[in-house]
Image (cartoon, rainbow, N blue to C red):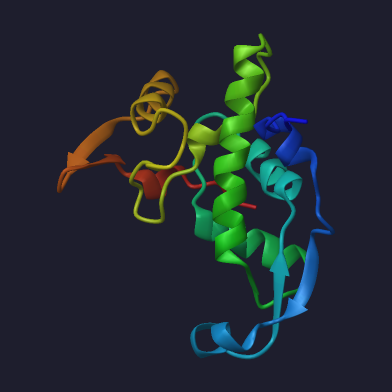
Length: 157
């Protein structure tokens, strides 16, 4: 019997025992030291993005710092956070395609240097269109697209 592929929305809803706080794994201690790491759930990452209002931006590093602070951990797992950022964007696009108008504003997540995210749906073109619709100016820097003066628009939590 053939299995049907899960939608991004279904994947986002699965928690797999997350979030959880764990000791920093040995292979990561060289970079992050000893201490605790939070491994977020997909919905947790999605909920942070949903808090970013129109006219504001957030970076993956800011999301990780926010979650680490909330869980009193030393840092937040960058790999799972990145995977769940992409999953959140894909679920939002599925919602949009099904007619929903209140979707997670994934386009407000830019890289730490203000450049657009290549791993988002139809990226970076769709992200640029949506950011421009909110009044952001996109410039080309060294062949990449970046939000002009992005630091001025960073979300505060």
